[in-house]
Image 1 (cartoon, rainbow, N blue to C red):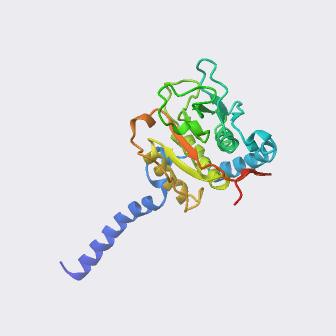
Image 2: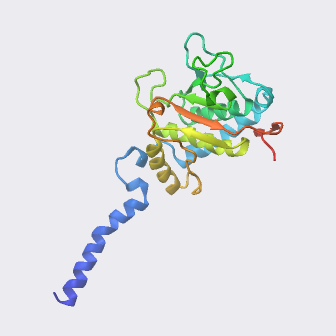
Image 3: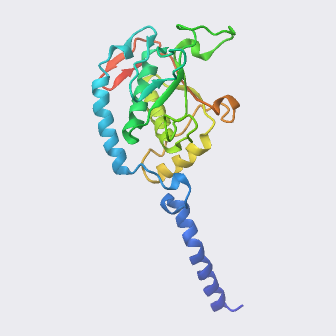
Length: 248
């Protein structure tokens, strides 16, 4: 092969490879995968954050988030308890309630009509653990939640992974400010990471954001629900205009 033909063939190969390289760098051109076609845009996210901050400034006045003892979770149309035998007074510590309320509100703003279902927070108040075995849920700082469904009122509805991503994103983000995240049990981490890559490329979330502290993502028990736990605050929880904070 002479030099001219070789150069021509090389240029042709390079041009064929260019779209693939572009697709890898630009999620908007990466195909029909759900994380490549997000419903949340920069404009929608910006408006949601403005609305969320306005809500937080008012909600942060609620004394339940700063109490030194276990408190029943303040629930509304964005955060609901699993309705089983009137199990609607789910007890936990205020900072955890704040994380759940703010994250659920965030999802509801981005996806009107969506809500988060809480399965349990504290297993010993007012209910006991029948087996008597050690249980993370006895400290009021751990919560089990159902995954967010495309039709929240239909238990057989598929999971809305995009809505789930934004809920977990806000949980992790706010936990860093409140008292820090301890660990999670989550079976759909790969779906979340796929969306995360897309969101980072779109500059919707910081490049430094990671899903940390995931324990055994393929554990069978977390296929049906999502677990999230935060560290206790060793000092009195401080009241701020942005919600509860565990100050150093």
